[in-house]
Image (cartoon, rainbow, N blue to C red):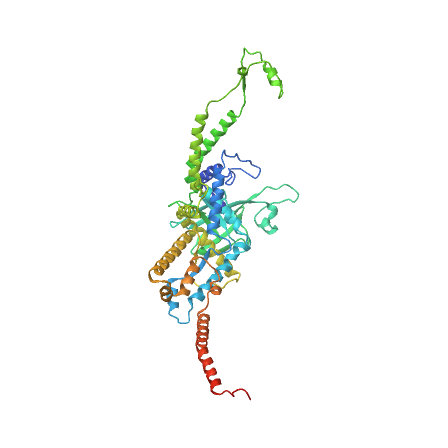
Amino acid sequence: MKTAAARFNALLTARTTVLDKARAASRLTIPGLVPESGQNEHFTPTQPYQSVGAHGVRSLSSRLFMTLFPTNIPFFRLTLDASVAEGLMTDPNFDKNAADATMAQYAQSASSILEDRLMRPVIAEALKHLVIAGNVLLWIPTKGAPRIYRLDQYVLKRNSVGQPISIVVQEKVYPSTLSAEVRALCNVTWEPGKAEDPIDIFTVVEKEGEQHKHWQEINNVRVPGSEGSAPIEQSGWLALRWLAVPGSDYGRSHVTEYGADLMSLEDANEAMLKFATVAARVTFLVDPNSSLQTSELAASQSGDYLYGKRDDVSTLQLDKSQDFSVIRTVAENIEARVNTAFLIQQFRNAERVTAEEVRLASEELENTLGGTYSVLSAELQYAIASRLLYIAASERMIPKLPNGIKPKVLTGLAALGAAAEVNRVRMWANDAIGIFGQQAFAAAVDVPALLNKLGVEHGVTDLKTLLKSPEQMAQEQQQAAMAQTAQAAAPGFVDAAMKAATDDPQQGTE
């Protein structure tokens, strides 16, 4: 059986090209995010001549984060399989609305782990790595906070359908952070009080059947107590990609796709900055036949009087303003394309920009990420949702869910479909009301079911408390009918009482 170090070295060559592209993309956007070979915390990376790339990465990653994992609402809900739902619908005691409300509470409980474990900052950082490097490894343990591994810290191998079958992580630890038992078993020496060098620790993740098993090794010795396993669908090891490349173990980044524009913008900004540096230099020319002396001119103070003519002194000019305008126009056009690629909104230059224009521009930009959403929905959102449900069930926050209940992502790509479904329902209702009238529509439609559908598609929680139960609605209808009957009978009762009083004037006088 190969050691962890041998596994890592065997897969190292396949990562070389991908890592080089990731480092080049990092140099154009956020230097140091994917460090160079041999770089440590004391290394100062060279800064680019423009910040458009860094601004674009931060804007796109932040927008993705708020779209995929919005605050205060769960990013997924639980649904029943079609076969299971069909079998339950035949049961007269089955209440689908109550089942949906209960599953929504389970999803809410599992989603709360995002906040309790401080997962949001880690996921936000992982999205930056996806935009720049196209690959990142996310580890979500059952206990404690999650962490990410950069592309230069791990290697992996996938099967034909894109599932990771082997992941090897390399990281550095100080011997003093290890327990005495681990140091003794793994042949690690440590002398207190002396300077220590970090050592390599490898983490291996292997697919065995339908399980992901992992363990750690130091000096080719397995670390005791480091073993663990979980079903693949609930595994905490998430090898994320920005765009999946068929037949490749690694993904392609967003920055790499627009690298030509970023490199051209870098060159254009460098040329403009150097031009501005030369143009900012002030040099005076003095007529050699003038009575003015350069020493007198240089030593003169503001308000001094000197003998000479106005034309004796002139300023050296570049006369390159027209050439400068050409490169500036090119840079502005490239910057506009980069802003569009990174979903940085640019509205028309006008005093008033309507809200409808902002909405349409936002929808257009969101729709351009449909392909990216499809990958992130499967490898990030669905995987995190499954992992959160696994953790919640293991900690008894929710009961263990049967096989017929699966998570369904509500944000990202699903949000685009949900918004389209809501618009279709709204247009259908408006057309029906316009043709048949509001009363006929309300009489023909199951209003509670329609409200429940709209609430589910909008991701509204606690529908069970917002919508009235059938029993409550029946009771209110019965009370309203009784009140209406009593109100209708009241005039007749009054007339009868008045007639009785008229027929017997002595009634009630004794």
